[in-house]
Image (cartoon, rainbow, N blue to C red; front, side, top):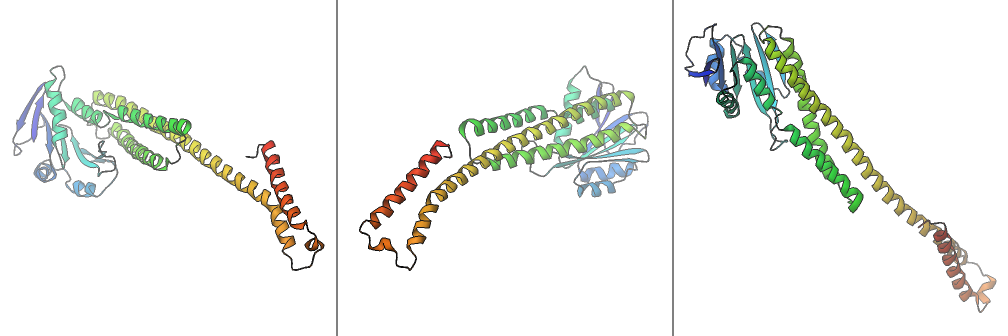
Length: 305
């Protein structure tokens, strides 16, 4: 759809309209429908093909217009394919190009229904960017709660296997970290305003939004550190358990080492005097029992097990 807006009034217009430099326009359309508008506005449609194979967000400054390519995380399924949105910005027009235009049109309708807001570049762009992270505070709080519950399970219930949970949390945090890093890069370039397209009011909105994204980014870093601490605590528990097992085997080995010596000694193919002694066999049995009891008492006293 193509819209013309002025003040608090927004009007749907035909795509074949002749654009005027005295009015402001907003386009929200898919890749196919955008071809005609891009050609009419002398915008580089090759950027769409380039952006379709690019994974990261980009900001490019061209003659008379700016191009922004965004990869939006799917909050319902972070590991699903990211939604790609292209934004062409000129002095009097913003053109959103996406595979699915419904979310962008919803934002526009929300702004139009608010009678206290003036529809313009400042409001449309800033509101769109704010929607990119609108619910992320709650999502990060839920991730923090998951990490806290995992830590509690490790401490109180002695959970033995949490590798899958830790790996899943690390991957989710990594996706958010990459998302915020790229978004911050785009915002930094956007605020340079080399083509002098954005007004001071727009730049003020973007500086505020930049601070919000920066806080979310540092929140992600803090959550990664927290998860690292939990992982190290889990690794420490695993190491302690392994040490206890090794200690047990060491005690068993120490107890049976003298018995092994007796077995080796009397297993030699030599004639020993004890063989002719009537009490030789019972003495060896009693000696073995004494050795076992002695070492068990010794290790117990020194709390080796």
